[in-house]
Length: 163
Image (cartoon, rainbow, N blue to C red; front, side, top):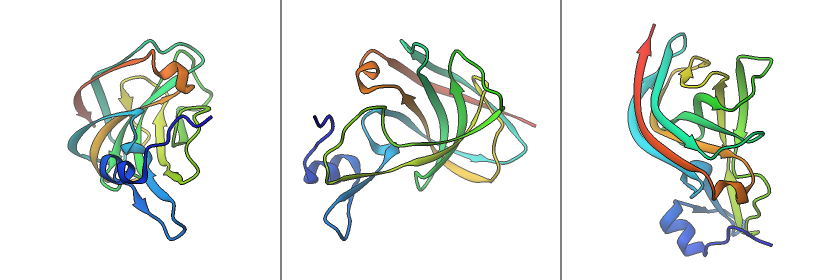
């Protein structure tokens, strides 16, 4: 069963997809409907700590988690933090995100994932290994598609930069 199968015209118009040489449509993960994003313009620099307030993910239950990240202008890289009820062994976690767990897409859709550097502490971004200009702050939910329907995201970010 295919869960996400908009027409090629809708992929281009609504999600900014590009047609590839093999007649598929490539779309960036950050542009898809299961990602909540808000535009902003902020320079992210290694060695600094950023505190993010005003982001809530309601209805997220363990073992599922969400990632809140500043996303670069190309939509391919981001730095952020993990919202979860459990802690990890490492403070900095690297993840690649493209779609919810178990979501099936039409065969003509190729999703270009976003590479994330995540801090394992809510509301704090400090795992940044390169400088970039953030165009968005986005919330990626790492859960089955059926669970995402029950989750509400409030995205009114206030970003504070600490040295």
